[in-house]
Length: 141
Figure 1: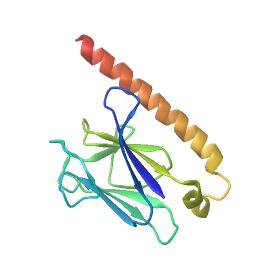
Figure 2: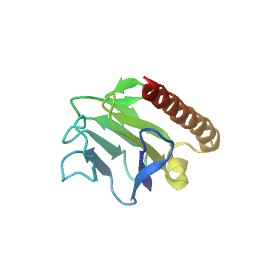
Figure 3: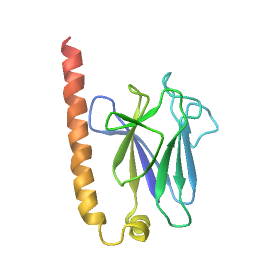
Figure 4: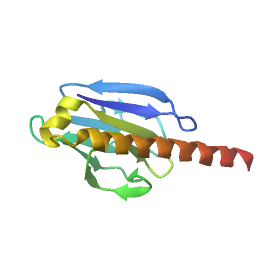
């Protein structure tokens, strides 16, 4: 199972969540034929896809949008998903957190998921704090 969570732009809280159990491709974008539809001018009609590699395998992020998809401020084209990854659609667009359930992870990363999850969650928490600080700084200007 994979769960996508739209994060609030200014606070470290979830705005909306989409769980997927049996899909091997999850499409995200502005078009109504996507699995996750985001109404933002910077999001392309077909912006990004999450693709499962083989039955029970890992997932990968494939950027399709003209404005790009970003992880930690770096533009990506195709990267593997790590539990807790936060992607940003366009440099100033919505943020989506990707969570993969433990059973899916076991098939790909036997034994290492606990350490990685702890480290990744710390990075996610730090990014949310930085976003909050950036947003507070913007409000003061």
